[in-house]
Length: 293
Figure 1 (tube, rainbow, N blue to C red):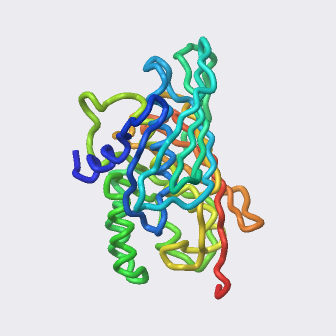
Figure 2 (spheres, rainbow, N blue to C red; figure 1 turned 90 degrees about the vertical axis):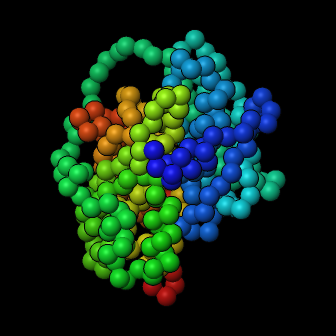
Figure 3 (cartoon, one colour; figure 1 turned 180 degrees about the vertical axis):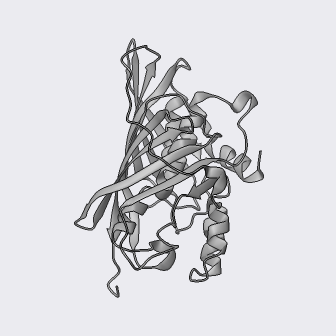
């Protein structure tokens, strides 16, 4: 296991301070606020810690309310909404400096057999043939070196590989609002830590990294890295359909059907390498063009 991955796992291992209250730390991010994927993943950990192990997360719905302070701990309060025969529901509020910064509702289900169908996996090149995001970033002369290093540090625990050039790598001309990335953890998850909730939590963490890229592609924008767009996540929803492992390759197939009113919508499907549809994701975010642009 890489040192960076161990650091991420430590970040997600919350301290329990009361029966339904947990505390998490933060890490430096590319922008001067808590990374949205971090707070979503930590909130899901808090919810999962109050649910019996035979019930797996099948959906989450979340709102980002305020920018988080990366220099302060985050307190997660869990409300036990329902414990039914098949489903369990939890609501989590993340608080910093006395104010809520994030709210999440999550549902967990005992395993059942039922009807089965799925959308087919789109074509994509083998991830082994693609450059790592670190290699891509170090090849961009138009991005300030300090920004490149922040990106690399923030994503060091994840092996993330774009199929095509990311928005900040090739911008200025609109492209199809569609993006694909392969991702997996930078190391295997083995032993006592290898549990289904952790894999779901790690996918939640990664899901906030690139989902709005397709919005930027539609307008030829490069995003925060090149300073032509200001953005932030507003809300985020995920549905977990089938078992998967976060330490094995997952294809994140993303598109944007709409942008308007200073907001952009991204929707995506995440597939295992053998073609199983594992997760569906939808996110809306603020996407604003600075006045000088």
